[in-house]
Length: 165
Image 1 (tube, rainbow, N blue to C red):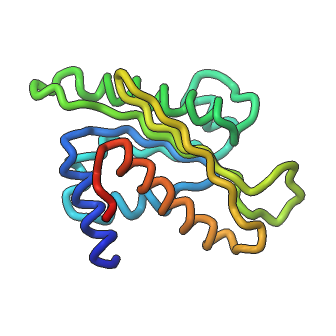
Image 2: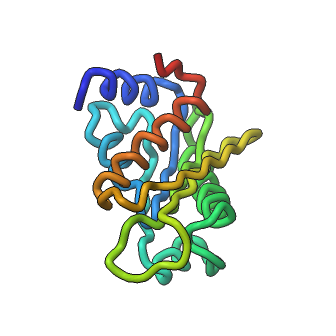
């Protein structure tokens, strides 16, 4: 991990927020980076990776129309926010909470309709942002995951008011 990356992880973890994070189809690179930085529990309440349709149904209690869409990202972030709320009910400090989701359709070895893409959603009590990401189809899956990790951190930093300079 480079110094810039480490500084960003520290800023996110020191933001005062607590987050439940859910990723599906891509985004595990970002969760790995967050969990690998010392002090991850200052920010992360839980990380879920409901990868298959059945796992997503279990996590949400409903079936998503399209697993990689803006609506899916919003639905997943809403559920993550609910879970973060539950986890913080007995926390006397009442930290601000986030539901963070990422749903992605990265390079695959089967035919796919549509572009390689992702949607990131961050939900707080009074604010929600959604970011879409389109990937270069000539890049490898690993390169797309790396790009997605950078976009997720950029979106999170902007949401939290962290200066990326």
